[in-house]
Length: 380
Figure (tube, rainbow, N blue to C red):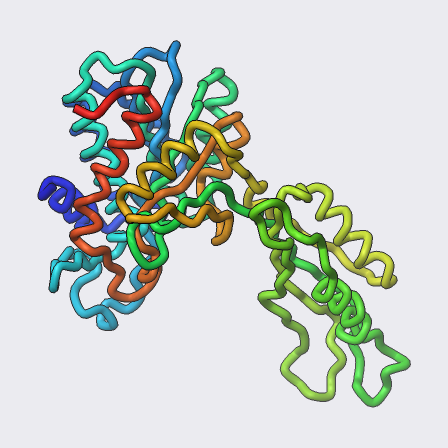
């Protein structure tokens, strides 16, 4: 499968730091068009999105979901080789995006090309959706495309996201859901003053501490099926003028909730604001809703993926809802069953990001088997 390696290299050479695409989607569209896919470029602001489809819309639709953008590489001097000049060393491909997720995107393309070559009159519809806004704000990417899909009644039955889900070997984990993510930016107002005269000031740090302790120590729930319990973590606390003898006039706290399907964002917002208000604080909270949780129950998609991964990995995969978030959170509300299957994630977002060439070359066959099973076609 040298073709998948060469395509992955071509994608890595394009410095598509989010939200830039750097020509990745055009390269892919050209290949998919030659394979008979209809390609729709959906650009919103600075974000490019590519939606490619092949087959009759009346049958079931299987979507392969990915992104062409990558995170910044950081200082290039920290890398053993140029992050945007792919290099194979000792059977490993190095470069920004090798694992997250240009390797999977290349495998999607090769699997789709092989599928339509084997089954030119295949039933159902095979689709690929790529965005350049997964690693960034995730506003004008799949989130925006999903709204367009909903408005025009676009039906998607199953979705395979190529995020790097494997832990130690390819295929050892099948992600069947993700927690929701909600970020709060809290401002607690006090009255600035001299530390020697606290009666003439109001210290927002002192006032907020009991409320913050309640938020941090609360047991929000006991989990949900394979989801862990909801967790609240504070990521930033800031106050003060820099002087040791000044009571600050404001405290700022950033916190994030990763939550399971026991909750939705609106209920968590209401509960957090109720808890803060019960402490008599003068406060306001700005909220960012990153996405609701999703969960794919047992059905054709999980069954097909489990069988394929067990065959490739030599043992049934762990079926997990852990990790952060992915763009599948925007597709799932369309009524779509979603899973995530991809390479080992040990090096993602790190210096010297990499993927084993052997794993990369196995990925197209892995995706191809899933496509066959879901579109009810036997292997040739």
